[in-house]
Image (cartoon, rainbow, N blue to C red; front, side, top):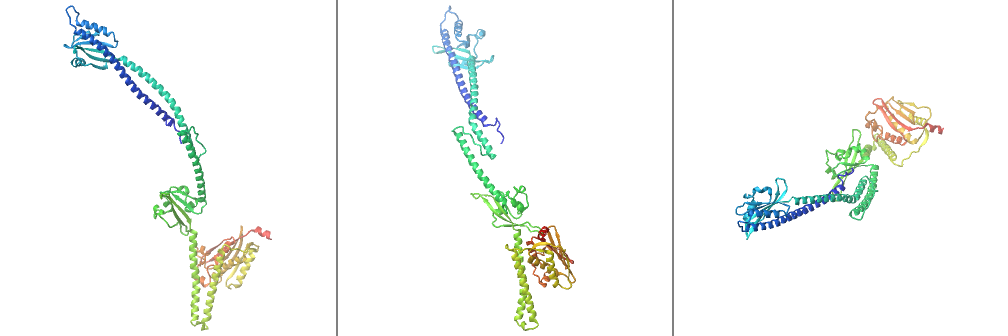
Length: 610
């Protein structure tokens, strides 16, 4: 998380708000105080001027009402005298004019430089209103010559209750506003000092408040990184202090929850990692958010590339199903990813992830590889079918001959022995089949054990060949490519005897007249390789890998005529594998077949035995 700049910090915001509040409060107080003070000063000034004018109006009115004789001085002279006396009593009055009512002429003015207006009729509206209505009129405006504020006042002159004239006064008010300016400057200075002190106090107060908040911010950053060891310092018992205590308690609970969650996550990860089944989890939109290694291996995908991929696309079901269909899927789905001659089948089970409110939060998919199971089931079905077929054929034949004997054929000296001979052969064939099945069943069981002993395989191999050579057809020849040196191996002689018997029997059955069977033995690395070759019709290349399967026959009709059960090579394979070897065949159609099998061989063991 980036560090908060000074201009974006809550501390600066707090100080600014605090200063602005004080500033606004000071301005409101200042406007109210200055307004009231200005009103008070202007009112006092007006009252002072009006008091002066009233005295002047009384004096002038007495002179204007006085009767004059020839020896008396002119009215204008007496009024000028009064104006000069009264004018000296106030420095704020710049001019006083006296107007006579009947003529509306200016009969006197106190301004020596403005004597030219004496004798002229007045044009001032205020004077006319005063003369007509007998009211006091006043007005404040700026002098157009110098821009100073002046007070103009018009007062009626009365005598015996009648208006006989008016006094017009022009007074300078600049002193009043100069006082207001001084007071404003004092107030502004005080406001600035107050704001400065407020800002300093605000900084200290903001630090006091934001310090624990800064600590909590640092703690939150540390918690986001997984560090729960820090504690917020508690500076007091106020609301912020209680918040710090609560934050520390929250940190402790989060630490406990994190530890518990980590433990559960490790358990889940361990379980998912060591599961043999594949597990895929999706979000509520059907996109993959978790897949374990077995699932990735089963689907042959990379875990990193399938995250956020739709589950339908991952499983290849987008053409057949929707995500809502999978949420409602109760039965397992069989997914066939097999290719030609390479089956690969998975079973998918689905489970919906739901919250307590019933809201669907995702889907869990469990994958099982059932390729081997399907293969086993198929082999089991094929095995049952083959066994049924193999048993049904001789049983059907026996029933037919026995029915014929029961119907009187036993009395026929020519047919009866033939029928009994066929019945006996079919019985022996079934016995061989059952014995072979019992051998395979015993080898498939877990308690199957070999009785191994050390033997010279060259001598052992020659002994087996000698037994077959005594009973072979005269037109079949044996060729031995067996070294005279000894090959000491550890084997179960009975089981290897049966392996050789089954392979050699097949070679003799399928060898043509005048054919040759070749027996080979050689050592290679830590094994010996035994080979038995015939010159029969051979096996097609596309089916040679099936000859070791149970009940498989290349030529089924000929095999049955020769008395085979189709289990000889399957039994041989099981016994060779039990000895730690392997068996295979090579064939060319029309030229013959060679069966190979190997057995473990360690020359140093032979040296020690010698």
